[in-house]
Image 1: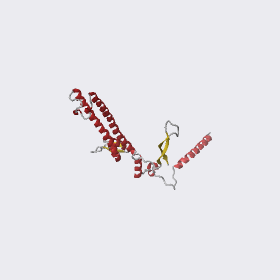
Image 2: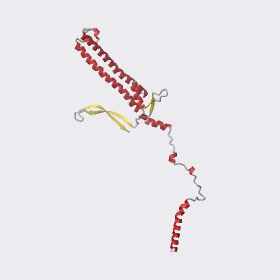
Image 3: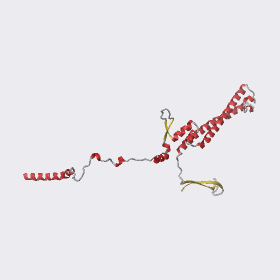
Image 4: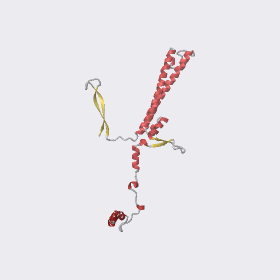
Length: 242
């Protein structure tokens, strides 16, 4: 029995030496190997990589997405101002002063269109308002007996009518046109704001040379008639990609 225990202890001792051998050898440095200093271990290359962006790349990226660039507006006396994108700034300038958005976008040739359209509708609005006031005063003067019909004091247009009802019809006519041109003023004002906004969005938009618009005269069938008979001269447009 003692011998069996002795054999068993010897076997266990051998197994322990075999298992502990590689682990013990891993802690022993070879005489020819230099120990590694933990302080000199370099960081991972992905953490040390520095992305270099050239000024040309920055300009190209900014031009490609100009709508997202922000600028300050109303900056003065230490106030940082309002941060707006270029389209937002152009639209706000156009809303404050008609034509200012076109000036900001450097579209000088659009100024005559802006001021011409606004000037026309505002001028006609003033004209109809003056005529409306003339007929209102004339109707009041005639119905109260202050002035007779066809009196020059009624006004250059109101004096042409032979009755109070005729003068009243003039009131209705000029009032309707006056109210209509209020709408036209708002429309012209809003269009120049929208134009400044869209123009700022498309200012740096490039049209590739590979796109071309081709046009040519053509004979087109007349709707409601048999194909080919009769035909009418027309213009055919095609957008081609080269």
